[in-house]
Length: 225
Image (cartoon, rainbow, N blue to C red; front, side, top):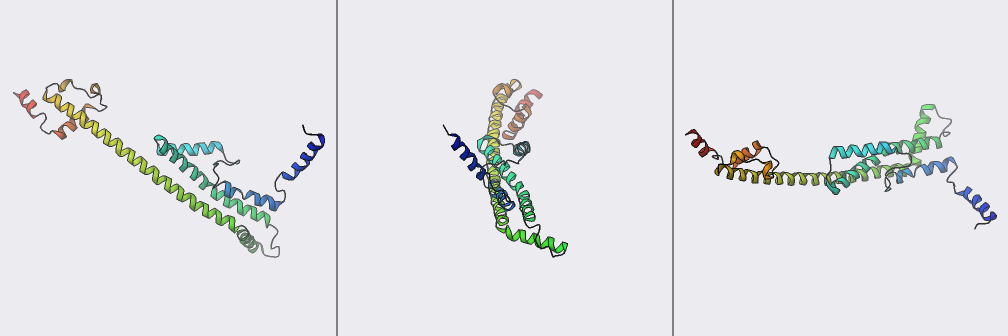
């Protein structure tokens, strides 16, 4: 158990661990968002609106309609990457806002308009590394976004092709069964759903006639006679 003296010492030491207190220190600390907000694994920062983020993600899922874990993971990654990209203008604005506060008293002898441009230039020079880093991270995020978008597009196109191929295969099988029913003169009782197919009768008949154009010729002659 800590003694009263140790507790008092810990409290005193804690006063020296509360983060930067000077305007310059606070300004430098605020620029950590350039790193944690764009390259960190955590997408939401303390000041972010969780509800807005959830709506943002839901918008991506509604737009892309992913199926399966791979597609869902890619859509989530796209949403998160764009969320970080949307943060960049605010971060750039924040950097200049911090710089304007830091250099607010610079160039007092200059005219108002000239002074404004001089302060902007000094902010850029003072925070050039952070601004360049912002640009680098934006390019990196855009490349990551494009890569994920291409991967998602490839997955979905492949899935759609496979689904169409499966559907066509099933339609062909239904048509063949129907053709056999016609030849056996039981086609009037043949129904797709009763034979395990989710097609309309019209779809099956059209496909059957594509496979065997003269399918009903003999049946028509017999009925005409």
